[in-house]
Image 1 (tube, rainbow, N blue to C red):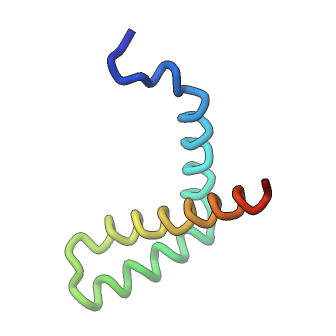
Image 2: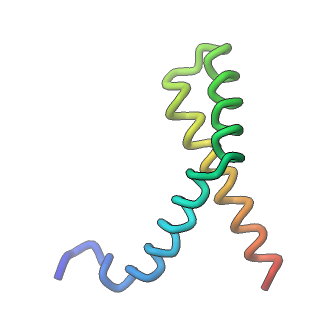
Length: 72
């Protein structure tokens, strides 16, 4: 048994990982990430690529969460 509690949350974790994988493989995600990275590089934002990836992923996860909430 591990101390992280992951065993009890494995189904939820798997759902999140599947959603993230689908998002990261989508063309829309790559377009948004590229657009954000371009903007961040123009303003000399540190680690523009990492920030763009994180912000694009957060935007898609938030959108997915909003859709899930309104569907229930």
